Image (tube, rainbow, N blue to C red):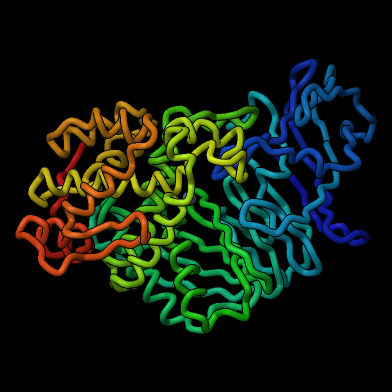
Amino acid sequence: MNYTIAINQNEPHFLNLVFTIPNIHQNSIVVQLPSWRPGRYELQNYAKNIRSLSITDEQGNHLPYQKITKDRWEIQTANIRKVLISYEYYANQYDAGASYVLNEMMYVNPVNCLLYVEGRIDESYEVKLELPETYTIACQLPHQNLTLVAQNFDQLADSPWIASKNMTHHVVAIKPQLNGRQEAQLHFWFQGKPCPFTNRLVDDTIRYAQEQIAIFGDFPCENYHFLYHILPTTFRHGVEHADSTVITIGPDSDWEDPDFYRSFIAISSHELFHLWNIKRIRPADMLPYDFTKENYSTLGYVYEGITTYYGDLLLLTAGVWNWEEYKSSFESDLKRHCTNLGRNNYSLAESSFDTWLDGYTVGIPGRKVSIYIEGMLAAWVADALIIHHTNGTKSLDTVMRALYERFAKHGKGYTESDYQNLLEEVSGISFATYFSELIWGKGHFQKWLHQTADLLGCTIDLEEISLHKNEQLTETQMRNFTKWTQSRFAAVAKNPIFDQQN
Ligand SMILES: [Zn+2]
């Protein structure tokens, strides 16, 4: 499978694409443009950005075809060996999940704009970018001479790139020093005004990355790429990919503002945590991804909730944030919980299923909760319960490590009962009420939040919307609080706390 992609020189924001499909042996083939993108669990209408579609054989003869859904075409190919599909794509949405082309920058998220052939999703792809050789490519895919190579469509669809004349690039080695690989490279690519304090950025990134590695035991790729678009306008959006992330954030005039940098590092930590949690640890309902329709899952509180929880918490344990900074971020999430009456009307699991319905819009008043916010709070409750009932020897870390070892590393997806079984196995207690009230019930959060704060020696005030560490802690609370907030990396380096799983 082969693509050539160029920037349209006559009209801004248009890409010119040619998809060449070889080795055809059927009387007809079906091609599909993905109807959604991993990371955003709702249907999309990418095909509305396609203009001037033309389908021919090698000699340029037009082939008969029919559109059978909004983003699916059937092409008649009797006696035809090779098909060329050319089209223009309007790449004019500048966020972390879309594609955007202007002047001397081509930013493409392939899942938006590249077609695949039904039944041939596992064939390799070569993508040739028709750009001047002075362009640099930032992408997780191997590439040479402006040509990218993907092993299959799934990998291609999950490999966005920026091709530009004006990117800043830093690369640092990270030494997980645990099992497996001894060293991995972290790449920082900046399109737009780069972070002015590189040393601090690198130091902070290595710190939180080490905390994440300490939980999972290894770093699952050789090269990881942060693709940052720093915009002049106020913006904040990140999307995870197999070995990379795209983060669009602004305004670029705010680099010296501590709140802006805090937000920048928090979204980066969140996206890196996805390297394990969703890109590898994946609900069975989404393995493999089906790009033709909804991939419903009630487990958003795991793939987004737990990621939101650890994204911030590990900045605290890594020493990137102090307690006040962590507490402030926790309280802003708590504020979103307290001001959303949806918590009385709809469960977390059902809200996860319904991201395909209205998960990324405000929606009607008080209908639903958020897999990010309530999911984060549910993760916090689970973590504290495990810490408390194992006398501080285990935590939610142990569960995440087991999901990685027992499921992800064997290419297996997990189900809700897999997750519940692990929580119970690790903690030694039943999580039945936790699931019936917090995950599938409604209106129960308040009680659980107070209990959780108490286990950790804190007080949570849902009127004032605050979380305080108590002045006086019992011995048990002190042990729980320490376990909750201590550095995972330091603990592993000193005294391995994780069970080895097969
Ligand atoms: Zn996320």
